[in-house]
Length: 243
Image (tube, rainbow, N blue to C red; front, side):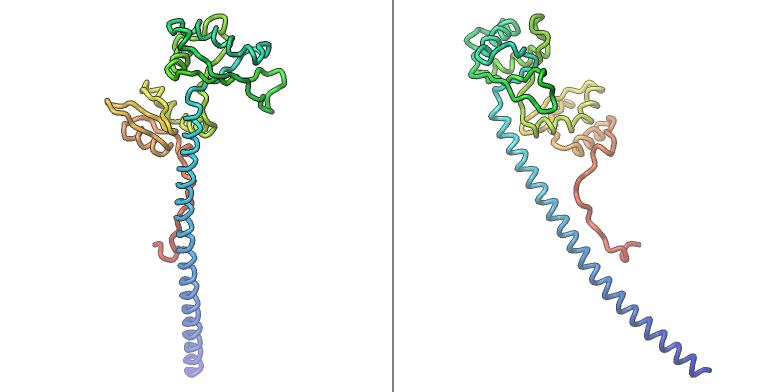
């Protein structure tokens, strides 16, 4: 009986040793897999940062090319393309009468293609390039501060910006909404950034996460966590090393 127990014990010890060896080999392989995953995650984040940098540069180049442009919404389709500049010139003289007509030169104006999701009866937007930037800026400011003249009340004027910059501004709504509630002064900068005035200093915000951190530093309400989630791939730790 004792001999049998010794034999059984020896067999169990041998099997346990073999299991331990196989487990050690598996942990070693898994550790290599974790290292490879983390390396790929770091490289993916690096490429994502590079891609984002190039995207912002392209958006900035597009915005610079459109710097003197204005987008008009609501100009009747009955106004032919050949008369768009004349129509806009009359509207400018009514909106900013303090500017001399020589300062309200329009280089070109044209209608955009109608988006597919809009009905055929929808009025197409008009893009116009204003020769002088200060005149373009004055027109845009006047339309927002004083409102449109009565005869042009159905028209709206927007800055002509790239799709990426427009997407960035929409993504920053959780931040700008809080700034508006606290009556804090902010404005948009280029390339895509949010410039916030706080305690006699201008703070540049380029990401939601950065904006949320600033709001927290200033003791303001922070946006919901869902709106500031990161898209980065998380790094991993070997589970058998976590206690």
